[in-house]
Image 1 (cartoon, rainbow, N blue to C red):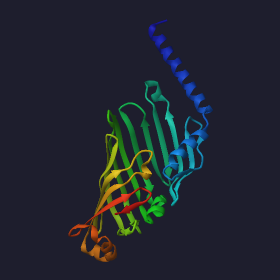
Image 2: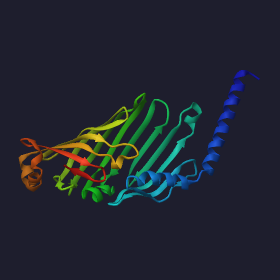
Image 3: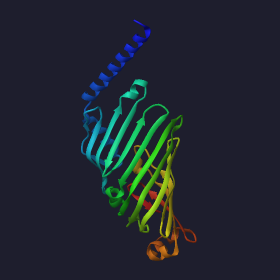
Length: 280
């Protein structure tokens, strides 16, 4: 028997043993333990997740009709969320997990590698903001528009780095209130922006919102990690209304007058947390 054949048989045997180990681990591991760990992490932020997770036919986990909630009410609804390990990369020493979520007619797909240089790939499209209850229950807002996002992150010695592009098509919102202060109602905004990740820290780089009579620019640090919902916000919203737009929403801009930094420019600091954002 040649040395090449022996190596090939050895590799096949190793792959078979690894597959059987993963299969039996998957079958025997209780989903109740996974639910308990997730519940513990979320409870520290005042969040709950329902229903319970279940295993899929292929190795993986799924939630059907998932609802993420806080004391304010529902924050996120998702027809299906599925997470599963990718088996083929294991044979070359990479641990990769893929996730996919269906929100209305939209989708969010993510792959995350626990090791190696290429860490994350994200692709989202067609997610309707009107179907995300966070905006109504936390901001008191009526929202419309479809979210698109795409990006990659690389792993370095000091953490993850990379870019995630963002766009919301045909963005409308009204009734937004952050603490005691309202924001102007707007419609048919053109938007684009980017979340830049550097050494594990994420920042929204000048997310622009442009519509008839107004131009806005949102920027600041983006909370990440297991405590994102309770991490203090440090963001800024610049609002540059044209005279006719300002006149139509005179009361709103009277309340925001203290934030005027130059003629026709309002720089509004957004503090608080994701679940309780405030203008301070």
